[in-house]
Length: 220
Ligand SMILES: [Zn+2]
Image (cartoon, rainbow, N blue to C red; front, side, top):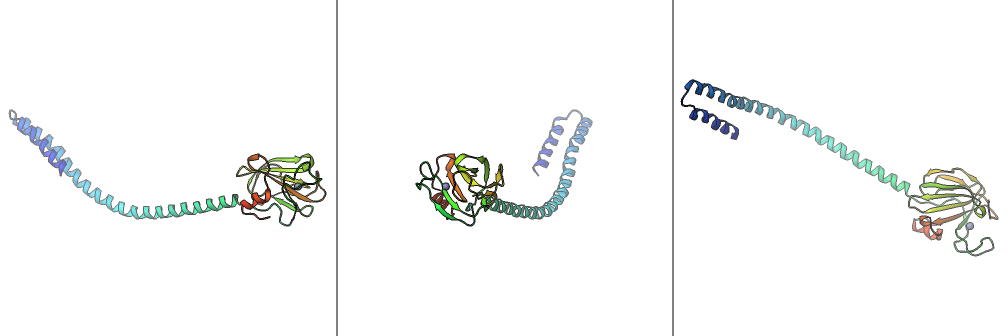
C-alpha cells in the first residue's frame, strides 16, 4: 500500500509540471504509469508468490522441525557417546588382577638404598600387568635395580613406573585403561616375582601409590 501510494505521488508530479506539452505529458504519464502497473502486477505476483512461499514455508517448517529434532537427538547421542568415551579413557584400575601387597611406600629394608619408593604387588611370574589408565609409554627398558621398567605418562600428567617386568608387551605409544603392557617378573633388584609400582605426579617425586590410587577410587 505504501509503495502504491508513493508511485501515485510520483505519477502526479509529471502531470502537474508538464502543462506546456499535453502529448509529452501523456507520454510521460504513460511512462510514469508503467512502473505503477509493474508495481501492481508485481504486487499481484508477489501475493501469489508469497502464498506459494507461505505454503512452502509451512511444509519446510515441518521438515525443518523434524530435521532439527533429528539433529538434536544425534547431538545428544554424540555427546553421550563422547562422555562415555571420556569416562572410559579416564577410569583407573589396579595394575594386576591377583596380588598380595608385600611392601608399602616408605618401608625400610635391606632391599632399598633408602626408603621404599613404591608399592609391591606380589603376583605370579608372567601375570599380566595393566596400564592404570590411558596414557602414553614414555620409557620401556632395563633400569638397573628396577629391572625391566615401563613408564607411562597418564592422561592427568602422572608418571607411573611399572618395574621388575619379565616381559614387555608394549614399548611405546598410547595405552588404554587396563591394556596389558607387560608381565610380572623379578628382574633387577628383586627376590621374587612382583610388580614394583611407583607414582610420580607430574613426573615429580614419588608419592604413596596406595593413597594415590585410593584418591582415584581404586583400593589395593
Ligand atoms: Zn618395590
